[in-house]
Amino acid sequence: MSNANTVGAGFAAVLPAGGLGKRMGGSQPKQMLELGGRPIWRHSVETFLAHPGISEVVLVVPSEWVSHFEQELEGENVNIVVGGAERWQSVQNGVNALSERIRWVLVHDVARPFLHSSIIDSVLERLQESACIVAKPVNDTVKVVQQGLISNTIDRDTVFLAQTPQACEVNILRDCYLRMREEVIPFSPTDEASILERYGIAVSVVQGDSWNDKITTPEDMLRFKALLSNQPFQD
Image (cartoon, rainbow, N blue to C red):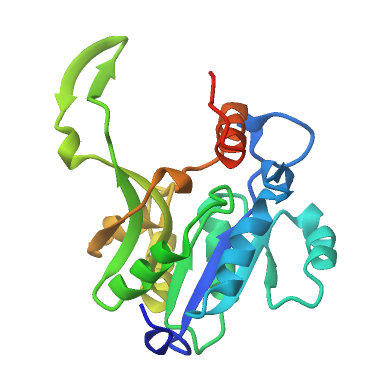
């Protein structure tokens, strides 16, 4: 995608980094761990800052880490916002911090540090048509298991693993947040696509890749360290 199609078009990135990453273990949030010579969170920040189509970058962080990120990002064009109790609330805080010139928002987890700029290009292009998410096809056979027993086998050609960015028009997402407040039974979505799906917004898929996988466990860290050093990964 050429720069002429994207620069000044009103695209922004909201990067939630508010989770504590308890499955990773350790004494600090996983996004603070170093990978490839830099903290995990910084990879995503730098990727979006460097992309010519992104006008604003908002980083959403735990309240107790605000001063740390302010020092780390001093002089850089990043808006630091405090996260909420749930991931979707952190994203909402980030979306609410966007300026009026922003029409579309891309939400990307900093725990996916190796997003390629070509995927961002594809998302920006798709946004001209519809809301979208990045997702990758499933290669393994998928089984539905209930109480330890297989109850069904799903056609893997119809199954994708959701990744980020997940993107749509800012006004659409804000409207969905308002509708969530009116729900009689609280709705706790795990991603932006879940919110859009609930309120009948069409969401298309941009194909991702394994480099865009999420770092959740110590095993994930080992795998990416092996990939970065071109070493064979051993479980």
